[in-house]
Length: 289
Image (spheres, one colour):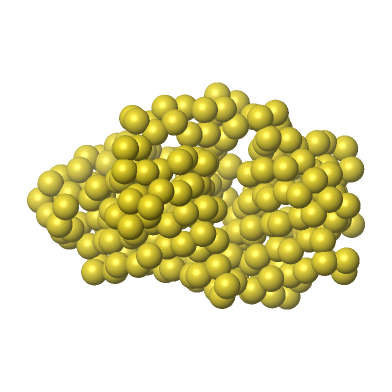
């Protein structure tokens, strides 16, 4: 297998989002986006309790993209204007297609806050192409134990297929565009080769641990944590130097203009203004506080 070159390797520095301090590997000053992925936030681990709960996000709107949560530790309650209500636990994924508009709220449950615990997750913004930005909203929640897993021969690498396809195994999430999303768990000494469709742009993010990529680049938390691959090969290889967890993402780029403001991702500034008006007029639905 011809390995893809590594186009960029970067850190995952902290940013402040109101009262929340989190890592933001995408976007950065060097990498605006990895089309079709436009934002990746790694929040936590936070120690949540009755005196410290900054991650209670009340009702807010979205339009034009797919906000996705990979919950690593803890639990969150999701509610939305489509009348969905679900308890998302560690290892679960919630995949919201905002489309023409959705209002949702999420945060640790009252029970979780009272007993205390650790909260950690990934918030990913996946763009929608222009012809699908005004499609009906949708919500998918898949529990950790329901994901299909590809395991290496020595059982030291386990890859959850969240969406897309790996080695003929398809994920449970239904996607709007060609996308792969894999959660990778690797033990020390584990190795695995991953194939990437040649038309996909792709990235690899290290949540924790220490791995070698393509036998050359080392990813280690607090150092280099994110890789953007070139599209000149068939895939990449991993080797675990310690127990590690990574998120791999790839997708067909849209090559469209992106205009974003707050919770909206569209193609023109006038579409952003229309989204703001529609929300104010109640056209995205309602969700009680």
